[in-house]
Amino acid sequence: MPPLFTQTFYPYLDTFENYKLSDKDDDASPNYYGYVNRKGEWFIMKETISPGADTYRFAVGKSNYTTNWDDRTNLTYKYFYEVF
Image 1: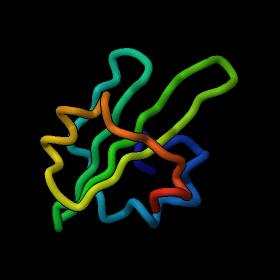
Image 2 (image 1 turned 60 degrees about the vertical axis):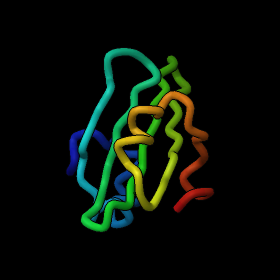
Image 3 (image 1 turned 180 degrees about the vertical axis):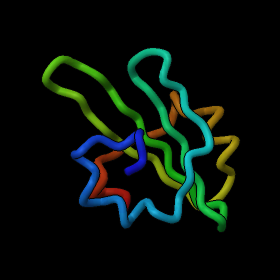
Image 4 (image 1 turned 30 degrees about the vertical axis):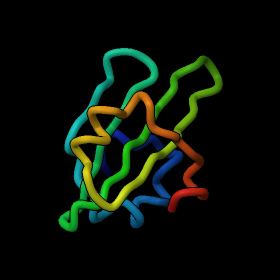
């Protein structure tokens, strides 16, 4: 299993199988993980760690990954079911 996904995401790994980790910013909560596929489509997962209430939200796009990664703190993040 990919090390960045908790058991919460095991059922959804097939959605992510074509994406590869490109960047991570995990120095302090929130943490960000950037993934891209061969077509240049991308998603960034925002992980907020809080005792008993960790959250995971996503921003997705079809191009301009590096620009969006650089601006990751200003993107709009949504629930998984809203973006995939």
